[in-house]
Figure 1 (tube, rainbow over the protein chains, first blue to last red):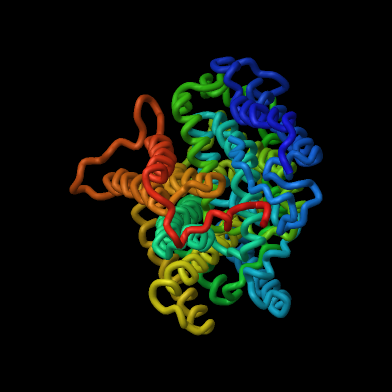
Figure 2: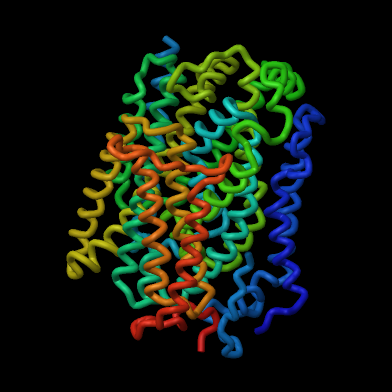
Amino acid sequence: MTRSRSDLVWIPTFAILVAFAVPWPLWGVDRVVAGLPVWIWWHVGWLGLCAALFALFVRSGAWERGMGRRAADPVDGTGNGAVDRGGDRR
Amino acid sequence: MTLGLSLGIVVGYLVVALALGLVAYRVSETTAEDYYLASRSIGTLVLLFTTFATLLSAFTFFGGPNLAYAAGPEWLVVMGTLDGVLFAVLWYVIGYKQWLIGARNGYVTLGEMLGDRFGSTGLRALVAGVSLLWLFPYVMLQQMGAGEALVGLTNGAVPYWGGAALITGFMILYVAVAGLRGVAWTDTLQGLFMLSVVWIAAAWVVSSLGGVGAATEGMLAARPEFGSFGGGTYSVGFIVSTAITIAFGVTMFPQINQRFFVAKSAATLKRSFALWPVLVLLLFVPAFMLGAWAAGTPVTVPENANVLPVVLNEYAPTWLAAVVVAGAMAAMMSSSDSMLLSGSSYFTRDLYRPLIDADASERREAWIARIGVAAFATLAFVASLFRPGTLIEVGDTAFSGFALLALPVICALYWPRTTRTGMIAGVAVPQAIYLAVVLSAVVDAVPTLPRTVAGGWDVALGLMLLSGALTVGVSLVTAPTEEGDASRFAVVSD
C-alpha cells in the first residue's frame, strides 16, 4: 500500500511540533500571565496541541500508511508485496 | 519523633511496595510462564504507565527540581519538549517499526533484532554490552537520588550513604524475592500514586505560599532572571543538545526499547502515543515548578540534599513530605528493577548464551541473571558513593551514551542497504570516543576532555551525527554480508 501524497504533510508537521515545543519566539520575554511566566503557558498549550494532532495522525490512518501498511493490515502483513519504502519520518 | 515518623513511613512504604511486587508476581506466575512472551499482551494503560515509570526516576523527582531551583524553570520546557514531543515521534518512528518487526520475528531484545538482521553475533553482543555500560550510571543515579533525598528529609540525620544503601538493598531484594519476572502493573499503581501525590504536594506548598501568583512573585523577587525565557545555563546549545540526546537516548534504554516489543496490539501503541504529551506534562509541571518556586522561599537546601524534600518539610506536614519521598523512592526502586530485569535479559540472551554457554539450562540462566543483577547493583552503589556529578549530569551521561545507538538503529530499520560493517563502525567508534570523554573526567591521570563546546553544545550531539555518518558511509563502501537479510526488517511480508 503506497502512502498517499497528503500524508507527507505530517513530516513538516512533526518537525514544527518538535521545534516549537520550545517557545523560541518568547526568548528573553519575562511577562507573567495568570501567575506563571508566559512562555510556560506557550509550552503547556503546545503540548496540548501535540496531543490533539497526534490523535489525528493516528485516527486518519497515516500512522499505518507511514509504515507502508493498510489501516486494516494484520500484524504479519498481507499487502501487495511492496516492501517498506523507507520513510524515516524525521 | 518526627525523624522516626519520616523514616518509618519511608521504610514502611518500601516494604509495602516490595510485598505488592511479591503478590503481583505470585498472582501472575502461572499465566506469565515466560515473562517476555507473556509481556506481548500488555494493554494500553499498563504499557503507558510502565513506560511512564521510566520517567519516575531520581532524574525527574530530584534532579529536575534541583536544576529548576538552581537555574530556573526552563527545565520544564526542555524535558517537556524532549519527552512529550520528540520522544513521542520516535515512539512511532522507532517503536512502532520495531513492534511490527518484532511481532513477526519474535525478537525480545534490541541486540537480538540487529544480530538476526545482520547475521552477526558480534553486533548483537556489542549492542548489549554498550547498553549495559550506560545502564550502570543510570542505576547509580537512583542510588544517589535516594541518598540525597533522605539527607533532605531528615535534615542530615541519615547520611547520604545510608539512603543509597537502603535503596540498593531493596532493589536487590525486590529482584531476589519477586523473582526475575517484573510485573508491569506495580509500575502502573506506583505511577498513578506518584502523579496524585505530586499534585497534592504542589497544591499544599502553593497554598502555603499564598497561591500560584504569589509563589511566582516570590521566585521573581529572589531570582528575577527566572522569569525570562533562556539565559544562564539555558543557552540555545544546551536546550537543543539536551533535548535531542535525551530523547534519542530514552528510546535505546533497555527497559524502554523492550517495551516496543511487548504491546498487545498496534492500537495499544497508538493510544499511548496520543496520550503521552499530556501525561508527561502532568508529571513535570508540579515537580519542576516546585523546584523553581522554592528559589523564592527562605528555605536553605543543605549541601548534598535535594530541594524537593527540603521544601516539603518546610511547607507541608511531615507525613506528606515523607510520603512523597517514600513514593518517589519506591517508584525509583521499581523502575530500577525493570531496568535491571531488562539488563539481565540483555546479559543472558545476548552475551552469556551466544558467547559463553549456548546450552545453559534455564535454571542456570536464571541464577546467572540474579547474581549478575546483585553484582551490578552493588557495584553501582559503590560508584554512587564517589558522587561523580550532579543527578542531571550523571543522568545526561547515561542518556547520551544510549543516544549514540539511535541513528545506526534507525538506519538499520529504514535503509535496506545498511551493512554489518557499517553498523559496527557506526556503533563502536562514537561509543569509544564518548567513553574516552566520560572517563577522562573520572580518571585523574589524563586531561579532562570537554563535554560541551561553543556555549553549551554537547559533544554527544556531534558524536550522534558521526554515528549516523559512519553507518551510512561505511555501508556505502562495503558489501552486505551473506549472513545478512534485509527482508527480516521489511514490514510487508512476501
